[in-house]
Amino acid sequence: MSTLSGARVVITGGAGMVGSHLADAVLAAGASGVVALDALVRGVPENLAGALATGRARLVEVDIRDREAVRANVAGADVVFHQAALRWTRCQEDPRECQRVMVDGTFNVLEAAADAKVARVVLASSAVVYGEPMRLPIDEDHPLNGTTIYGAAKVANEQMARAFAHLSDLPTTALRYFNVYGARQDIRSKHVEVMIRWLDLIDEGKPLVLFGDGSASADFVYVDDVVRANMLAAESDATNAIVNVCTGLETRMSELAELLLEITRSDVGVEYRPQPAGALPARRVGDPRRAEQLLGFKAKTSLSDGVRRLVDWRRRAFGTARASEATA
Ligand SMILES: NC(=O)c1ccc[n+]([C@@H]2O[C@H](COP(=O)([O-])OP(=O)(O)OC[C@H]3O[C@@H](n4cnc5c(N)ncnc54)[C@H](O)[C@@H]3O)[C@@H](O)[C@H]2O)c1
Image (tube, rainbow, N blue to C red; front, top):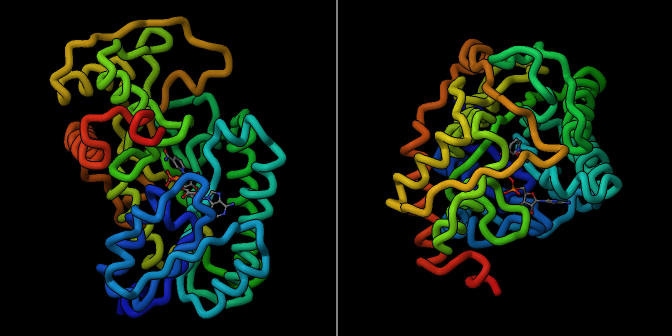
């Protein structure tokens, strides 16, 4: 029988992009209940509207730094998906807050899960742990050359998960997501990702600002695929695994800009500006083979389909108004 059918599921960061889609998916897979723990620093309750309407989900406003609250909510769970985190830029601004949320907070989640003897914890890690790539595509054995506070915290999370697996027989899987995008991604804060920044510029009739010569690249993976990878990881027998979640396809930023202009039928064009210091790696594409071998996971959503879905959702969420005006 499926691990998720009838399971009591806890999702930290459950009001965020990945967490809220995961709530919908595990409910559809027959989970008996979902507890979404979220401090609502970036996610919003509206993301959980569908899940809450089933009557089988609850949103509990909890900060994962609160050990007792985490423990109380994880008690009785069968599966924990740990998604709560700060954005990497926030971690650079305030490293100590990052340490407290992402390192101490993750410790609280793992400790509570071990005490509750849950069947599995699936943790969100990140391709940021690899830093500037030494080879492409980036496989899981690539050296961890990261240089960010966020990346260091994610490495600590992975290692702590492995340590708890040995100490307490707690089955864990860490998923290193590449660039996740899709419906319900943050469109409100000052920390929005490149696609949203560019869609805002298109609404304003301004050219898309592209730093560098456009040859920088990323591996964009749609949120529904990331959710499926999480579900497969929860169902899998693989223990202590660390797995990339990516498409294996490299997209140059200049190609992404052209695609956004085409899908929105915009003629604002692209403005190239010099690359600022401290920019993210020049090229990035993941090796998806371990995910396929170990979890049977393969990303399915093409970039053009995924971007169309993001654009449609954003339009519905904001009308044609600019994000900043809509939340002013
Ligand atoms: N989006 C990406 O491109 C990407 C890439 C690699 C890894 N990840 C990781 O995937 C996970 C999910 O990311 P997402 O894109 O859904 O981000 P998100 O910001 O939409 O979701 C994260 C959620 O965590 C919540 N949160 C933050 N601090 C908290 C705290 N102290 N206590 C409780 N909740 C807290 C936020 O309010 C938010 O709802 C994160 O762990 C992130 O680091 C994301």
